[in-house]
Length: 424
Ligand code: AMP
Ligand code: GLY
Image (cartoon, rainbow, N blue to C red; front, side, top):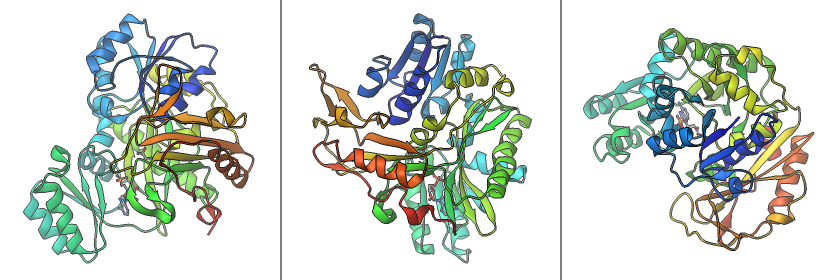
């Protein structure tokens, strides 16, 4: 089977690495990919945003299946365009991708279907939004409706802060059209966890849970980033809670989309808060998390290509999916300054010194003419280790981080630190 994978992050490198293990794979193309995918696939000089280019290339290379990594091309309707041309895809059509591309749509849908979430109201008028904030007893979370690359949720400590957030989004249009509609949501306290599931719109196959670290610095300090590390599984999550999430959040959302005429095919990733009153959905993503994918996919024992093909062809129920009980920890190495300004073009050394079995997934990396690898983005690499226990996986990941060097490298020291995975 020929596969075209769309995207260029460490998530896509992890997907490419796992797809490579499939005996069913013949050609693997990545658009545009990075220095890591170049070593295991054919990178194409094609941006993920170039939907026409992706469709044309899929035809030219006789691609059987397109796997879409990031949310933007899904929100823009890439899968619908491929369907018109009879090309199978792993990823939702535009109507189902709205679960991520419009928070107002997602919240209305789950309210209609009684799926547990934070209380909320949606506003298109700044005045109405401000009046609502003034009437609240507590400071809320203010969210841009549209896609905002992880910058769309403003968690406020005071009502004044919330008023400023409303103004930033709706008057200053800090996030452009994405913030013209806002969702104002009850602020919840608890522990966050990422659920992921394969689904063909009807059958749902949950993946192991994972936790990511969004803030730039240790102790959850500093600005929000795309994600600085992750681990799986979270030992603090008990089985009844896991079952509740599968049934009442993930499966219920898949059913809701199906009933409303927008069946979801691909990876559905609900972001959740586990509160004292039970789990609540905070957001839905229509693709794998990054860096969650980097710690979930190494635990997959089954053939990823077979699963993706079954999802695209409404046959997920026919596939048995097995997971390893090993723990997995991923530490992101970023460019100093990220998520704000940072420099690129620094040579990366030590990649060959990493222990066998430890995975280094590339994100912002580029290959020089002489074959050397240099930094080319904010998040540069994810170093991933598996082991029977989380503590061992963590020690192994950090031991190998020490081998890799580039100028102004920054990473968190507290990914999967024992206290954070403690059972309380
Ligand atoms: P979102 O883009 O909706 O995932 O939000 C990004 C981050 O904001 C989440 O990972 C949480 O840390 C935080 N957040 C979002 N919604 C809430 C909420 N209702 N209560 C508390 N924190 C939230
Ligand atoms: N890990 C957060 C995200 O992928 O949205």
